[in-house]
Image (cartoon, rainbow, N blue to C red; front, side, top):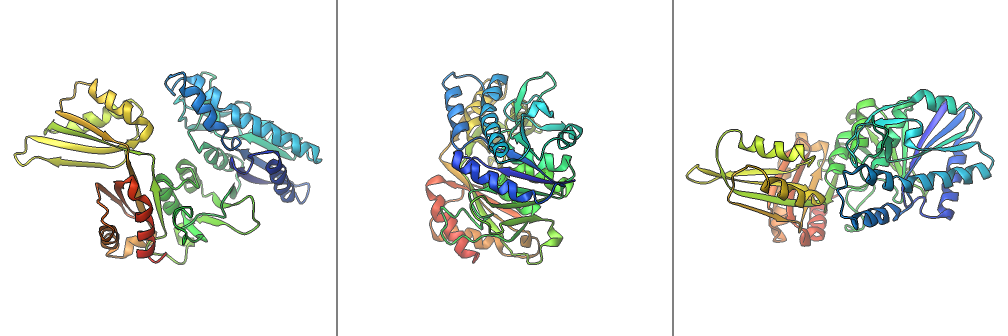
Length: 402
């Protein structure tokens, strides 16, 4: 038995006509009786946003388990509808919710992590069915509550299921033809990338590129699952996510990404003593707040420090409240939501000099001020004013001749 693992995003299943088109794509994969299809679906485009908006009116913490129960209904609807269309076309199909497999997760509601998937259940069902349609983005906790994996979590569902059934490839279908050197809606000269490494797409995904969820890439890299990112609306090959040694041409910079989901929090007048930063970030960690970029400065007399860090914009207010309500001593706390993070990524940066120089000079020529800088082996990120985003992306794309 050969199992094709496919995932279709919200725009791919946005309405009944598109669902019928996806059904045809699935049907083409089943060329003989030995072929099966394990399909993960997102909610129809816009449905999850509407559910989030409705929930927000209640002014209840998103860590409430009922939040996950509400959000999971979007995928339930799209997967059931897809199964009906496939059944009508003559295929033996059924839909599955996360808890029916089950996809076991921790109890970190709204951002749950997968612990285990019952592969035996899936393989047993394939004895009866040609296609299994799994509602993405969801699972079940130890206390039998529905959980969700965070926005974009259907990618993670798909790769986890591919791992579970020992598939070699997971196809991610979206509304674009692959992964581009930058956001083509902002940078018109952006080009499709033929091959990209796990490390590169992981850095790009965590830096704002919305093609793949970062946790899906982590799973694929850990278990050696190849990912093919391609368009639902075109038969052209997309972008293959591969191991570094499989990528023959290693550009200095492979892509440029931007994240608008950033908020800048600054603490001033912190007593400069050992362990103070650890205390601050322990408080944020206990509140389940993810911190990204960090910069610390010391006053000339060495008595006080200032600390600046970034968090997801939805956690900004929570971060401020957590720190204000703590026993931490500081003179001032400020935040800024009008920022964005721009990152250049490429495995070729490991063996080339002058990459940072090119970036900073390109931004300086456009009079763009850099607020914070962070680096890794294959990435340089800068924090800038969000109003400069388009200028920055186009300038860097030109500077690196992408």
